[in-house]
Amino acid sequence: MEFKRVVGTRRSVRWLKPWRQVEREKIQVMLEAANRASRSMNADYPRALVVNRDQVSSEIRESLRNPTTSVELDLAPTYIFWYFDLGYVDGVQDRLKELVDQHALSPSHGWSHAYVDSFLWPQVLKPIADNMMALMFMGATETGIAICNSLNAAVDQGLGTCLHAFTAPEKVKQAFGVPDTWIPVWLQLVGYPLEEPEAGGQRPRRPLNKLFFEGNCDTPWEEDLEVTESLKQDGMIQAPGPFSYREEEVRMLSQMFGLPR
Amino acid sequence: MSATKKSHPYFEYDSVKIWIAGAKYPVDATNTQESTLELLEKFCVAQGKNPDELVQSCLRTTSAGDLTISAKARREIDASIDSFVTENGYSGHQAIMLGNQIREFLIHNGVFMQGKVSFRN
Image (cartoon, rainbow over all chains, first blue to last red; front, side, top):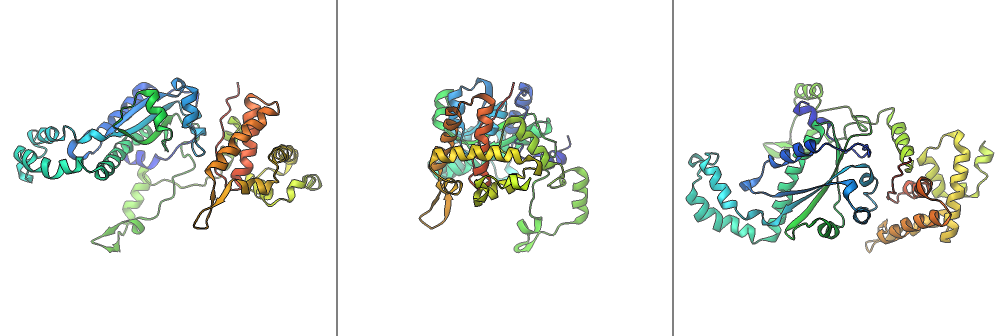
């Protein structure tokens, strides 16, 4: 699928085929996409624990349920528990010097081994490592970027996926041997969509001029309507719901699983 | 048909009106509505509340004076629904489906909750 169409097609898919497993190779593609995401300091922020639903004990599955996430846990065949590792600063000094050696960070932009060792590490990175609020902020932000790649990789492969609140982290930790330094971020549920590909239509978004600015924050970004039109052609901007069939689709799916109308 | 529809006293409760309107039961599903209302009535009786009181019991007022869903009450009512269907002799698909019908009443009245999924063999 073309990149723009992947971006436009991604949405939270909550109806998944519980009977169809996701091929392991497709999960690997998602993990690799996450691993290739932008990451400051070239640090290894994200951690992911991939678990097949049917291998999760009933006790753990019950503990993962909460009033807002229960149906999806039954429908999705694959769970990906996303974390970041608080120890992500460890080794950053060496990783940055790797980038210097690779000429990705070069003297043209002020980079050198000496700068990393003598200034960046003691004056910038070490203080971050000692500041829990900064550690948490960066860990969550950077892991979110990785998860975004994973979401898009799922869409690209025809999968449905959705992020959910991460409940019962202590029980998950005990059951799967999650290290103490891993901080929970999101539970990504993955499977094959049971609903139409539109999944209710592209989710409503406010226009660019409500969110983005140019030059200063008093000047809203003005859309070039030709660009907007080309994005519609390319699938980044898709038809919003509600579609005429959607209500009936949800009703039939609900009936299939004995769920509320 | 409308005479039948109005036959169950629960149709008079605001919360039931909200539910029926929200769930959009088709006109010819009056019998379904009646049987669902009977189920709700049995549950309400078991809880010692009428339908409006049942919804209210899932809510609480915050210190700022806002009405919100009580996580504790919701958890308890959710568990009560499961117990109720089991105690009434239902199991498997039917138990899940009937439990979710009671949840449906609460959901349409703003009490966000999710039930279990039934995989009928």
